[in-house]
Length: 166
Image (cartoon, rainbow, N blue to C red; front, top):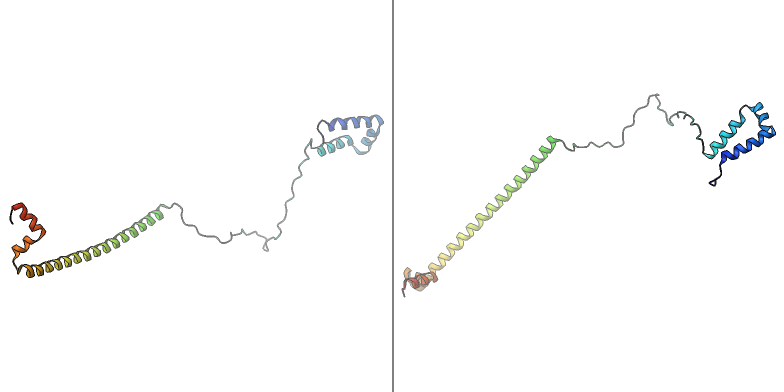
């Protein structure tokens, strides 16, 4: 409806004209309060007055239970959920993690200890091999003269320089 047009004024004017002609009086005698019914119908059609609400009738279920008693439905595929913040479970999980970390640390320490022992043995073997080599050279060059052999080493030479020995 365009704005500016007042339906109530139009209806009132129509009813006044009908009242002058006597048609409304005749209709009132026959059908009761026709004027009110027409006015209400027009107001409801234009949205001025809300229609009275009719109570909804309860609907029967599409598939009623055979025994007559409704059984609540169980959800499809219920999954058990673990506790989100259970303090006992949380402490247990933390203790398990701590034990795993300690086990890894112990295993690493054992591996490192074995590696260190292996390297220590290799160092001792190298030292023994170097001493044997040095003893062999000393025997060949200096025929077992230890003092001459010591003087021939770089450490011995620097020591002798400090003392002034030639």
